[in-house]
Length: 178
Image (cartoon, rainbow, N blue to C red; front, top):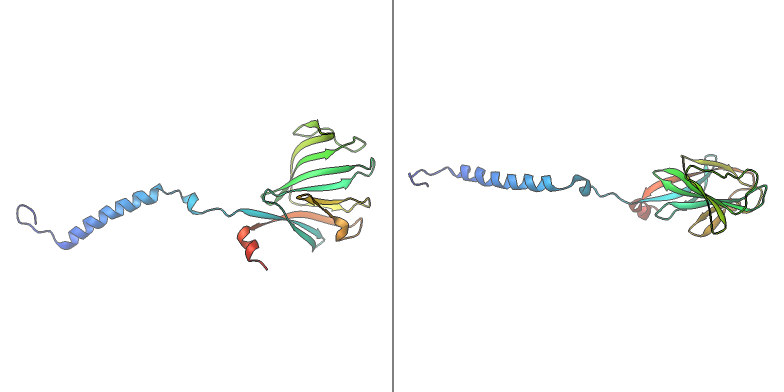
């Protein structure tokens, strides 16, 4: 009741109270970051090695998605290391290392060329959806993941055509898959 004796209907008080709560709710919701509400799940990559349509190996990659393709060069018979990382479902070649120059070895790259600890190092930024290759008849052709060498001849014979690619999975999918 006000000073003139007028009593407001109860539902008017209710609407005024709800209106205040509604304004407070709108202010609170507008201050939230919608991107933060949808937390991104970390992506975990696997290196998929296929012979035609048949998967011969699927190797989990570390969180950074890094791995190395290694082979022995056919002319100078020394190891070559191609450094890759999984990047948004692509293979990104970011570095090439070898310790001896010879015919067929590059000496320039978009990111530069340097000597480091006895290795010629080329910095690159090349992306591939998949990497086709033939397994070398020279022993030592494979991938290195977290210091472990996986030779392609563990799965297939020499001179077999393979294709490397990466698959993405969230950690939750990996934890629940059989």
